[in-house]
Length: 366
Image (tube, rainbow, N blue to C red):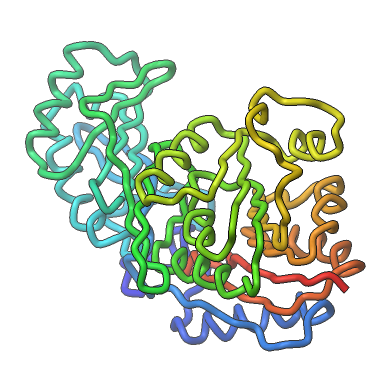
């Protein structure tokens, strides 16, 4: 990757050509997971640059000027002009933004960070401050917004958020030549590499043969749920975040999908409901015992699955496990292979030029 700050900025940790990075990560998969799986490891590549649709940079103040910063490899702050990892839309916007911000004393004063989200519908820029924001600040923010087309702005400080227009964040995903539209909030967890995200979803769909019903834990705003729903008669999907469930339900309506029930429940609450230990008002009009689940899909946080959840998902014939942390996936598989066999395994290079790798495993009950 052609970057002025390579080997200086801590954002990248792999510096060899991309094909060598792929070889390195495939070898990592073989070394860490061959004890569980003897087949071929699938691998889904990233673009080599301009693949990140979400990014955050610090802001450095010196005299009257401001610059973007990143953490350096030695823990120091380095000044950067741009980053070739970010999407083309963010990449083109970054230098223009810093130039215009520098012209407004109120906008650049106490600014310590900038976040960017590149969605299909709009580019969102979030300005982060160490000061109280007031009405006069809002006027300057409106002037800033008028300088850019199709860019929305939010300003935040502790306990305060200024929104000029409600964010309209929406992505169009192409899964097996079918387009899905997903709306989400600015605080939502999103997969930062759109191309690889589409590959992950397509791979998960390929894991389903003769599906009846699907149970999904940690469903977010429906990233996997909506495309997979066409492989099943009915889907029950759970998530603890209220805003995610709200968006997931709207996304169903937006895509004309009618066979999914989204419910705001944690994994522990869902297990309590299935064990008849507790009744939930959120399940009042839904008979969770009427489903015939042939598959369960889990996409847990970096901590992986708890022992209780592992024991729970062992009850299902087919487990699709999407992991953002190979270390916790490996720990969880040590337990799951006691009852299940891994029949497919894939690596997804969400974060090219780094050591990070996401994985997918399909397990069938022995």
